[in-house]
Image (tube, rainbow, N blue to C red; front, side):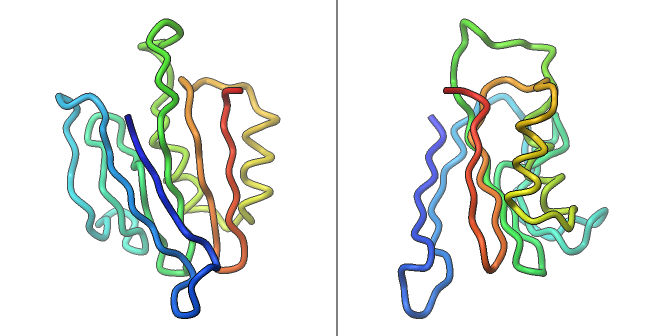
Length: 130
């Protein structure tokens, strides 16, 4: 199970305190967190199979994190990689609310997920599952 624990605007010195683990399929190759050569403003681990990330930061203060909604009965092996969601948000200039509202309106080609998207002034959550 993926786990994400955070405290937002609750500490006098830190805007965000975050702890997370990535407990995905172990055979899925990854690269540890670093600035991406192809997107030098993004600091994130990288899913080498899908090309995205599960947790990343942008130099401008944007943050995005993803956990999977594990439902193997409804799992589609041909679904798009959920890791593109945090990456797309980090590369965008959208406000978190607008980005997540756009996901809500779109056709959903992903397996189940929970997504956090935030800036220095806003932190929002969206899930494509009830």
